[in-house]
Image 1 (cartoon, helix red, strand yellow):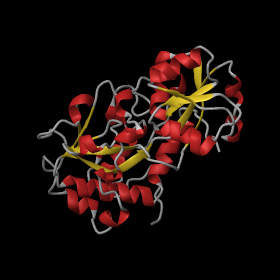
Image 2: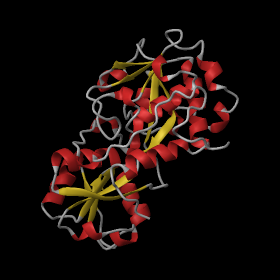
Image 3: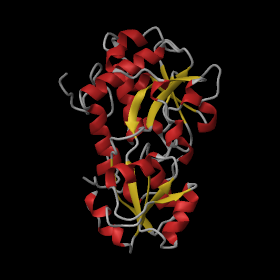
Image 4: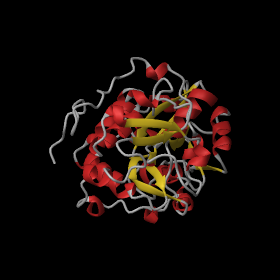
Length: 308
């Protein structure tokens, strides 16, 4: 499928052009760490995300009679809505990765900007069972089997990259490639994709430090017991912005091995919209839109380099 310019509406011509924050890297980055799941919580069978399952569905035609309110797409997210997922605590700007994804999905479902309504949904209540007041919720919600018993999830729209966190004066701060990390003292929380990434991708010379939880890993970093720790990128944003400001994210990479944590759009259990948003996301993955938005808002804007 031909890739479409991000600034041009696919169906209506009314989607807002993404506007980049000039200095988002310096802005507070406070994220919901609870969105992240350790390895054992991820279940690829929780949602049918195969391209084939969405190939026959026209998202716009599918959604027309499936929304809660005729002519309106209602989207939920928490408040505050944090950067880099949103900007200025306003999900309706189209700025920030998840806001941009939401409006792109809306566009492919056939809803113009003025036909989208946002509602506030606290993160910890979003995946409770029962009726929902939104058509879908977008808020860094990891797809887990426990949550999938109560709600529907779309196919994943973001696979959490692994981020390397080091103190500013650490030798790890000079690393620019995955290979540069191999002779460093590294650590991560047990049972996480981060630990798997260290062992399977970096393959360090020294023994890997395994911590019971992220708090222990952070303390070890501050005590110079390790040169760097790994966490998924959303968690790394929180650690470096709110907990260890003297640390920085020196780079990110996709592990492409082991279980992969993914964020999905959350819908009411049995929602007729699930197939519609799956079809929209499948199009966005196929034509490169998801990758472009991720690069724009989670790499270029925030300034976390890729480690190859």
